[in-house]
Length: 79
Image 1 (cartoon, rainbow, N blue to C red):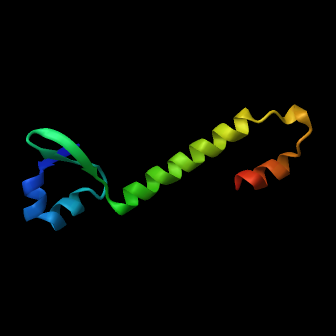
Image 2 (image 1 turned 180 degrees about the vertical axis):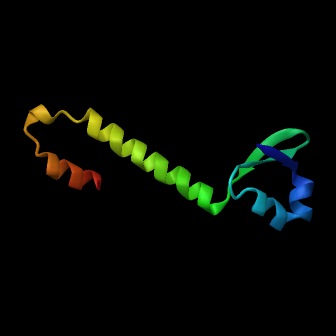
Image 3 (image 1 turned 30 degrees about the vertical axis):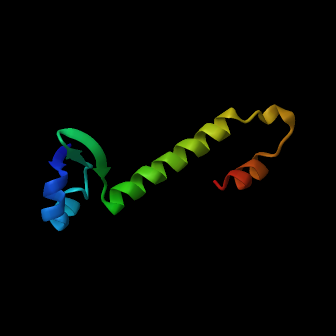
């Protein structure tokens, strides 16, 4: 992951945003990382992965022996 200073971000924002398309860019202030810049596509991929992970976890933790219908549960979870 690349890191840049806040000053560099101020002077070349379009260039830095372009760099953040595929990988996060760390934004530093006084040599300490203060934030990460993510491109829109990368952010979308991360959110999609997290949603899938949560859905899988919910399905795995459901006790189907209690008589709940699998189809009904998948509808409730939106999967």
